[in-house]
Length: 302
Image (cartoon, rainbow, N blue to C red):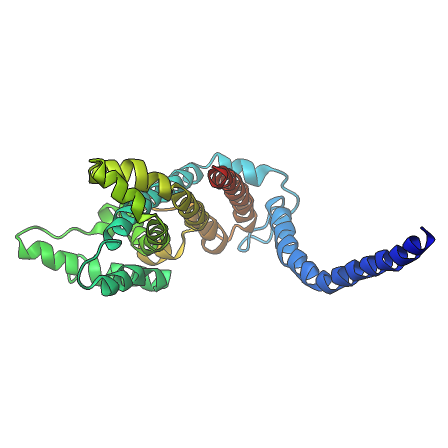
């Protein structure tokens, strides 16, 4: 018994020493991450509670929650919040719905399938600013855009899409960017489906619609939930497409929460109000992420 105790004591001490060494080696990285995340958050919280305007130095002092109250009662904030929800939901419907159909299509055998897969995934690698410039100047320009030329070719009057349908146009551009991501994830999920299940359903007389509803769609549910979670987190911060194409206009017709914060900070120079908007955006994003992560976790447990 004494020999066992003498043998276990050095082993326990070495384990504790190993843990301390591991914590010591990890501490610089953890410290950098804490400073990197907590310091900007603390400064944003502080600026949101004070009067801080870059063009009015006489306006200073503690503001309390007046910046939050002014922002929450501002109609522009409500419009930007509504536009954010519309953009996120619209892009999710288009990208997930279209991505599911394209994934099933590209899972079939046809001539040039490899080239078609590369082409459908390519837009995902185009930077948002470049993508917005391409759509604004090449495709949607009311005078020399491709769509305008196509409409004139069939005798129709060209449409200034960015002026008449700004939010819908931004949604279309962002959907074009994120559709390849959905196709990539969902195509991988479709290819993992056992072909024997589809063959058995076909032999039992199930048509394409029945196979899609009862076999393919349930199989894709986990992949769809992951796509929805990842896209939602990124779509809440859409900025470059709006800044390049519509600048939030006309008026606030295409302003989302991210662009409203930018306009308050760098166009109106209201640092306090912009910081309050940033804090609210952090809260909204974290609440959305919490529900999405729980939904994905429940789906993975099934």
